[in-house]
Length: 319
Image (cartoon, rainbow, N blue to C red; front, side, top):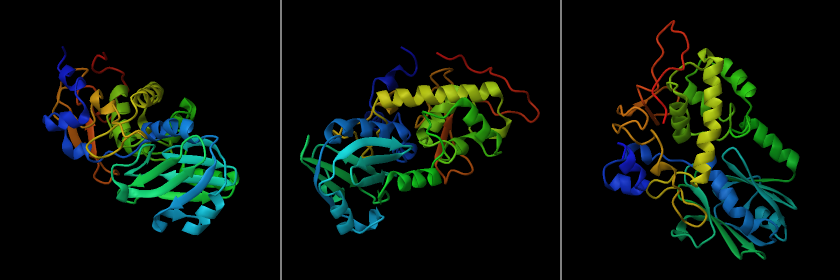
């Protein structure tokens, strides 16, 4: 068994109880692309093709584009034609318009009755194939927007989003990075550069790429950008397969289950634990531009670049 073997056998919550998980970092988990994609995949069989008998918004402060009665009136009798995702947003295409939901920090959908009914902000009463879908948001930081047509929704997406992190090409990524001297981690988390990456997956992508999180984006070589681009696809796909990341009372799947990614990730939340690639202790720090959110990296695999140094792919051996 490797040094990380014990960690891979436990859930994130159990790791916290055992003192093997950095609680300060874990409490900052926010729905990112894998969590929202998991929501969408869970909602599709329950909602697509269904008819909304009644839409019941319960918190006017979260609504954009209409009052409670407006939302309810526009959605009543509408067919849900598709359930999709743009970056970290859930997009419900109805026969009468579009509902776009930004889960932000604590938002999520439930197909089973929520554990905390006081957190319910929106109820979908459906004719088929399931009678009820709930949307909850404990801290009420999310937004629920109505758009009358596709053009209006697309305008909102374009104003806030760059290319999706699962769809951006290597060339698009290279051009975006060449335009900024910001550190690579805050650049990857900028939703106008590439939509969907947040704090957890930025750390994991950069560890897999062997790039220091404070490295200036504009100094990255073609080979380094290729590694980042490949890691984006690999890490995000793996996180979706494991249904996202859960810590404490945060994100759950639409069935109320924990996501499994943080039971086998490499660096996020693992301060002072051995790197799974080289066994050096994972470091926790804070870097500019991230609003005090923690950053985790391996000082062996992700070496800071000395001034004037040439690009190198050398680093710790990958498993």
